[in-house]
Length: 374
Ligand SMILES: [Zn+2]
Image (cartoon, rainbow, N blue to C red; front, side, top):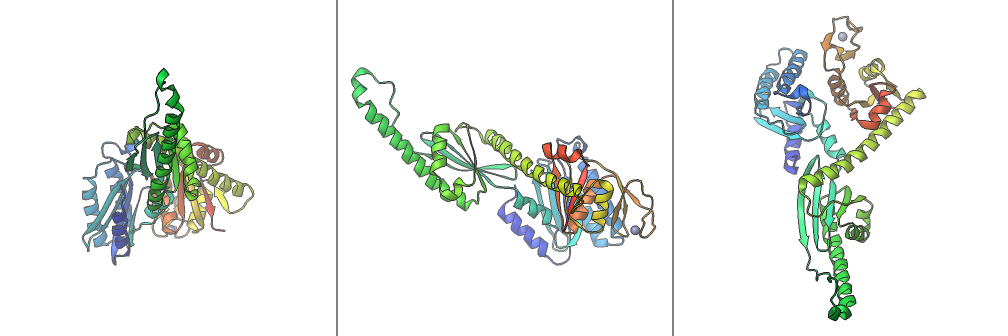
């Protein structure tokens, strides 16, 4: 889990003078290619390429060995390993995060954190409030992890049972007392959790539990929070954090897919009218080489081969033999998608891997596409 102090340590590393090696490595165990620690081999290959691009850099060679050694002790409990090592300062940052990012290694003055910072920035923090007549829980989900913040139990007079004849007269009064207490419980929860959610910087809100009480709570929330409400879901108030994470994850995924679809549609519209977007490998590589890509999009899980000129730092079609600029023989790149992502990121662009309906829309035209600076 990325915590505030991690980000602080990273920021220090990004400003530290001297070279830092930053690694983003796909270690997702749902991908068979990463099982039996094969991600260590993938890292070795990436570092080999990097060393080839910085021949005779002894500092890099030594840092690479250290990073390979550190990676051997990493437990693949998430999707991406983020590692930054500054050898001279003896500082290492390592974290396994639960979101997917393209693999890449960077040898730069100060750690290369933009991909991570963007992921932190783009990932919305979800607040989940579960309520019933007397209980209320507040949890947050961020970067695929769930955290419980508060569990409130109010003192509510019992709901009247089916009345016996002698109690029949007091029934309406007891019912009213119960309803009033539930209302004051809801108001109390709205107030308490409202404050807390502002502090926790919740971007989106899901309310669940007893649907009647949850809807009442949704109406009682401060206006600012009501605007962030996504859904009222019938999640049981006693659900386990794992169950809640799954339900919230479903909502989050749906929102993200909708955003991806919008991006892909915009790109395809631009491609159709010959505007500021290109589709297909050749056109996209050309745009990357020219440094014109603002956002690269590609199908999730896409595998492409290509050619690379390490002298010119340019990327080419797999059919090309020689660099058209310096005429040197091109190096084969079996992980072209990661390489394209890395180049775009290094040049200040953004990267979006798309799934579901967005992937379907993109696939109808091409496997990769790019939106360019105007
Ligand atoms: Zn070249």
